[in-house]
Length: 221
Image 1: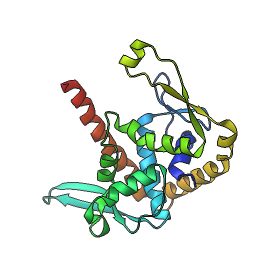
Image 2: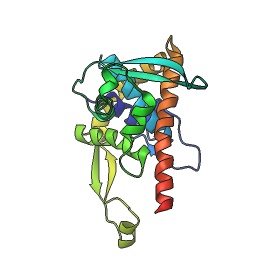
Image 3: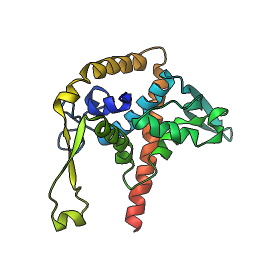
Image 4: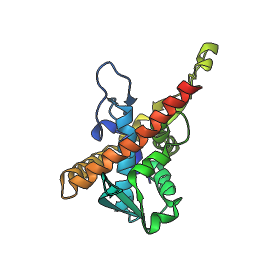
């Protein structure tokens, strides 16, 4: 089964903001649109958590507390219920949450989960999205095609492969993408809209905190 987060990645403009004109972004292979990379990374984690709840693997609960009785802290608490067989970003997020002993009782925050799942590598946004890319390749919706890279390109990190869609296979996901997009819209606009908005914003903040750390580390090198 294709992970919902992978479906959302392939049809990304159905779920997150498109990139501003003149800016770089991430291509949604199912539609050809280009979306904002940071929005996509956060959106995939939020969608993965929402889907893990739909599967009965976690609960999501909005919370509002004050640190030291003074500083207001808002977020979404994730409590682990089980570890089903999943792929894509769902698998990475689930294993990250399960790595905390407190995840089954006190729970962990969505901010912490997003911050931890992207902690490897120098590109936190890309690291999250790579889980969906790898799943899409494994499922046969994308393929990595070798490309020639010059010596200068190798020194600057130009990849040795490029992603290309497997058009006929990708077309079979359109109905699943339509259904997922409608359900994501409905949950964002429904009775839990405040919680889902907070889930979305805190996953974004958690990843971007890691991205800032990565940029500072590069500048220090």
